[in-house]
Length: 178
Image (tube, rainbow, N blue to C red; front, top):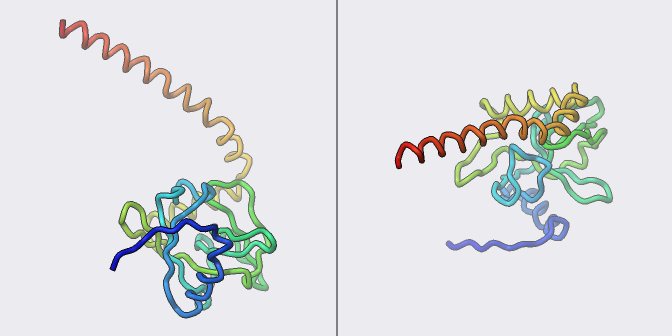
């Protein structure tokens, strides 16, 4: 059986995806966007979605949900409140989307695919690391906001000396060979 790639907007295809999920199917979708980086890479990684019906949301879970009047997003649960309200945050975001109703959940993401390898999102080191990272960002947003703003300067300060050393070693090696 051969497969073909089609490029359509998520809003156009979502009714079909929801119908497949209701029938108990697993849907594979290539990631579009940068809000879940570094965990998911834009255009490279894929997510496997299943129906959220039998899943009790927990911190760290990945869900596709509908933003009323604003399309769909796939982010990580960062808080579960009484009454079925959830807070979400993307792995590459600093702002929490608060009080999303559990009724807005479209799909649960138990697995992702990177370079042909299936990664289980429900257990293991990667889940613990990403959950810890998410909790730190939610609890200490000022630190992460400052880090993101200063990241370029930090990289320049660290990388520039390495480039200079590399050039010096290349020059020294070039003079020894002659």
